[in-house]
Image 1 (cartoon, rainbow, N blue to C red):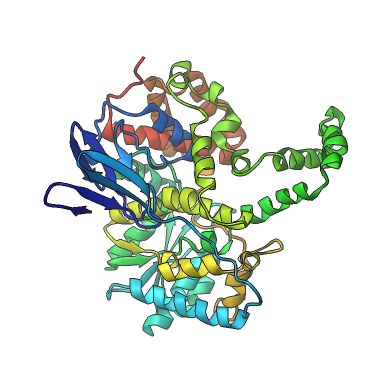
Image 2 (image 1 turned 60 degrees about the vertical axis):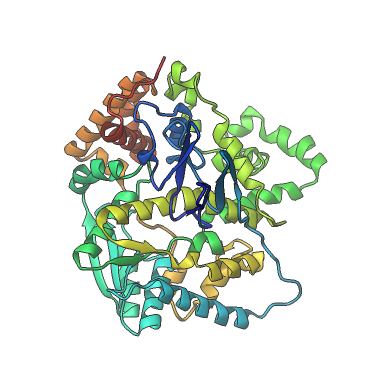
Length: 503
């Protein structure tokens, strides 16, 4: 923040808003802060922000949970001059597709150098520590620490005693391959009961990313071992095309290549017939057409949890009367149009830089490491690697349906083959599964949801159905809604215990 002698102020966030900046205007005074709760009034919560939280599982900028308090979006500035506020972007993604042939070997050499230098710049001279999930990004960071320092990294991994959630085996492969000093911790349901309240309350507004708890225990273990900073692998997927939805959306995009008369005159009438919807194989075709017809970015939210459950069935009429249900979609469309590119893939990447990285994954890691008492840095978000990504051919990021093709090929021989070919997983939390098996965790969740049901936001009958029937029918699916509501109520109990929806 810059301030002149006459009181003018200029705030600016970095390109991914790794450092949060909030502000409010009171009378003729401009008040900035790094946290929303340093400015907000507990009795004055914004219903629209609560709806956004239930939709996104976080509250995207520029809104915050507090009325009148705003958060600067990534790559934006706020200028307060002569009692007037101006807010706008100081950077927008601009992709520059290369013209003519490109040399893979030259790009590979440059990429590896940029990675090594980015990692080296973010080490603080203390214990060279990093998260290690066993995926390509965290494994690459661990390996580059050794290349940059000549010393083994101290790697920290989280495991779960739950089938389908634990990928410690891959973390061990990476640790052995790079000779790291490897540390493991298995999170338990008892750990969740102990720490959910503290983690929820540590954020300046409600935050529902469930992998925050595993990240916290990973960082806590590193801090106990004397580490002062950890490196994280966030950003690799979003810069280089690693999320499975990128391939999925390309498949949906192919539908647009079918001639319009054939789509409208034959395919769509046939696949909309009830008889077709009762045939499993043909039903998939109907689902494909249904999703392919929805334009981006709306298509990305067709399986949004709140929308699938139905806002009218989940939320009270009084709450719905105070919010714009279409608000989140309007924000997403606005962000979708900001990238300077002709590539659908690159536009999706830039969209994820905002909603996946800046609004969810980075606050998750920054918040939990701060609570654990250790710093964090993100080598993949180095300006040089961002520029490299902006200039990389789109087909190098997603080659056919091969995710992050260039990234993997450039690091073939550096990373273990098992890491290159594994499916992405990360620190996913088996919360729903544990919830149905561990009484203390169920007690905490039930108490939280029943308490939240008295605040006028969610229908009490929905809470009862969720806890009594739906959760046991499908723990993984409905457990996500339990988590979101529980974390919201836990935050409210610490920050705004008396708040109720105003009639």
